[in-house]
Length: 211
Image: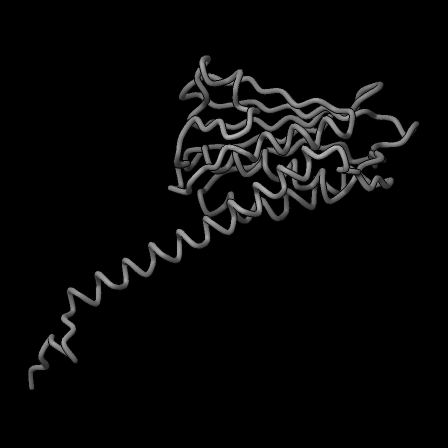
């Protein structure tokens, strides 16, 4: 017995179209919620009332924890992680939640703009008065024209990343504010079609308080 493709006035083609439209609506709603969260976060870090909640944490453990979570996403794109972190503890005074968000943003950017079957290097180096975290990818890179502006709010080099996700242009702006609140610095070097290097420098000192 052949079943008619017309069921209650719907054709198979119309059902497929409906499914696609529903997926578009779902994606748009998800993006809108993420946008609201991001804008809210940016407003928060811009506010003079934004105060860190510093505590002494083991920076080595924090980085290793981030990498463990990040490695799952990297494996999906067959990206090899090259990790170079000191085996000894690195104790810093940081707002754990805020610094985690900042470093996550840099790592996620490296992954989003990396080609499949490439590598991302994560290096932590303890110097005399600072700790440097360097994240190097082999992705699409950033042009000389765009590079000076990537930490500006709503500055977007590509509307979509390699995984077709929309980019708002606030992630790095938020990261920069958080790093600066920790009396640190973030910088970037990049070559188009060859990759990018992001460096986060945090003070290696327990003296004083963060505000």
